[in-house]
View (cartoon, rainbow, N blue to C red):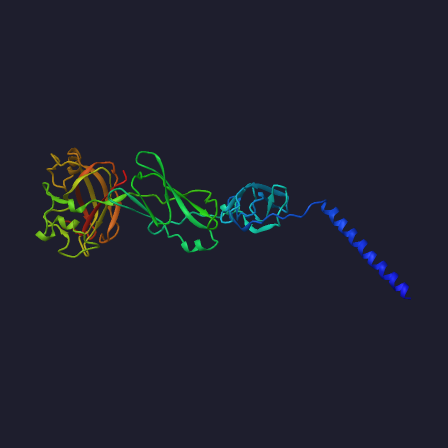
Length: 414
């Protein structure tokens, strides 16, 4: 029995020894005489989305043997090789992956040394790529509907937009980076200007009567490598470049047969004292009623306007308000005085012969109290002097005339 036991032990040891030798040989055969070498791995992978492309970023491995990185996507069906000799882990390597679809991707990055050994994989998941579908949902920045623009006396136009929601910039939301304003300047050239975060932009050379449109640009998320334009421009509301004539230059002019005031404190200069709304006596022009209507009053605007566009007239708070009157204009009153009474049938022909131009006949259908603004007809006529010919009052009274305020407007954009 002892002999049998010793023989058994010897056979077992021999078997184990033979087995170990065989496995070691098989392992070496599997490696084919080579060791498994894993190059250093990239760190801190990140991504920035773009328009049918993406930028991948990472810190390079400090392993000096690395010569390139290979990026795989679409389940390793597609790849891109990026050669690099940068081994400084504080640097950032950047690679653009082009020709992608509008989709969410997963990328795998391997490091390779000069012998073809590759590192363990590093994944960059849920990488959003944007494109036409995203772009089609963008809309242009909104202008202020109630007050889309203002026009200054110097001819500058300020466009008014709603504020940009800057709070969205700290989140993964699309936000407006700029808006392109496209218009024609006074030299007939097409001009483009950019509006960024401000709520308004001022144009100093806008050509009156021309079209102005705009288009906004967005980024889908903060840090995106591409911007997206809205597919089409939006037409801005038509800009009327009307500004009030400077009343500080206005002066009374008395021509033969013009109306006289009822009292010294109700004379013609009351018409440009800046009062708002229907006024009461004596803060009005009040004629003396010496002659039956039609009757005239005249004033000097202080300078020639080449494009008068509108008149705004406000009546008295009670009575004798014009509901039918004519607005006449002329650039120079030298030899322009008429001799006939304004209620004479021949007055109109004489006024025309003297060089006066009929700018508008205004007919009101109310009681004549409220401010009424109307467009003039002969807007290309150079005018400095205005003559108002009152033909009829709303209360039917035929001699007196009451007025609170007259404001003249011109086109500052021509």
